[in-house]
Image 1 (cartoon, rainbow, N blue to C red):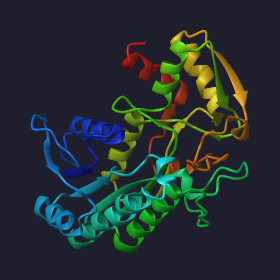
Image 2: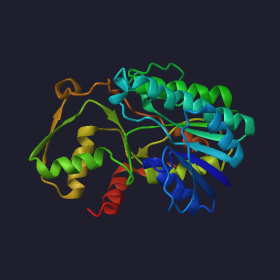
Image 3: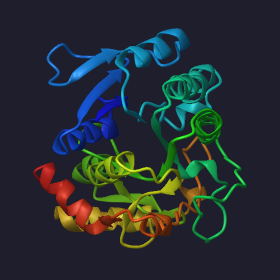
Length: 296
């Protein structure tokens, strides 16, 4: 199967390509910048350009598209000067890809986020829950991107994830490891609850999905229970052998963030099992494998 992966050089897109290769598929990558020495077929593409995006996807004529490209700098998205670009990438760009998939009548898998909800309460969010109330601009644009996929594509997967980490890019784990080397103690919020998502484990699931016809909305994070960022940091340092003291604080006490962060990022993933998909491994094991990959 020929599968187009947007944002293939990013944290998630990189691992999606690797899993497609493992399964014997033909991945084709697009990104805002490409390298000449890439081992896969790839194209430079600005997804905000409607004509070029539709023309390129039609010329490639893939069997499916996994849309990983996005503006993901949550705090920077709050700046007025950045908002037009955030909207152009997350909404207009997604619409352009969805329109191309519609013309070709092919499958499209869109990566979304728990930020489309209001982040309140303690009940895990059901993937088919329709009362969207994003609390920051990034979440709003990802929700609007979902709507473009829903309106344009018949064979769609919308997969919401949270707390992503992978080898190819920066993430919370790398930040905590860097800070832990130079500080005796760190302050970490303990009132934002969710579950981490390892890109390697998630990519396997995304390939499972694109090989199927079980379309719809899904939630996907690693198993292992719901935790706080404080809990996650304690386990990161425990497995890495750090002695750094971790101090729990509230979001209000921590401050700093421009964008409002959800207190409740619990995602209900039971629909995966109901539809025959293998859940992701527990996050503690995912963290162990990830630290080994970083040569910790």
